[in-house]
Image 1 (cartoon, rainbow, N blue to C red):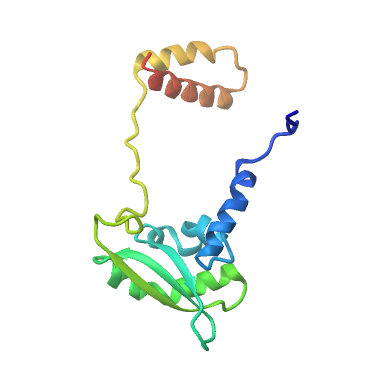
Image 2 (cartoon, rainbow, N blue to C red):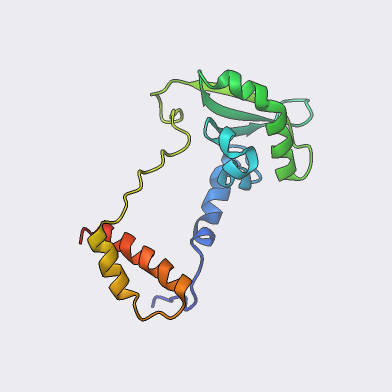
Length: 164
C-alpha cells in the first residue's frame, strides 16, 4: 500500500537533502553559498564566476574557496577577491574562508568548465493588438482598476505565447 502526503510541500524541501549531500562532497558545509551565489557575491561577480570547491589546507587556518571563471575575466575577479571573501564570510557568520583560488577555463571545454555563468536574458515579445483586445474583454468584469490592468497584461502575455 502506497501512502500519499495530504499537504503540499515546497520543491526546495524535496531537493534540499540532495543539494546538501552533493555540496558536502565538495566541502560546502553551507549550501546557501551554492544556491544563493548571486546574492552573496553580487550579481556582477556571479555573472563571471561560480564556486566549485571549498578545501581545507593541512596545518593552515581557514578554508580555501575555489572559483571557476574564464581566462579573460580572471584579472577582474582577482581585484574583487577582498570583497568576495568578506561577503562569503558574512554568509558563514565567521571567518571561514581565508583565501580564494581562481581556476580558469576556456569558453568551451569540459563538464566542469562552462564559460557562461549567467543565463542570457530572453528577448521580450510584446503582445499583439489582437491579444490585448481579447485580454481586455476577458478582464472586463473586474472592478478594481489596478487589478484589471494587471490581469489584462497577464492575459495578453499568455494569449500571445499560445499564438492566438
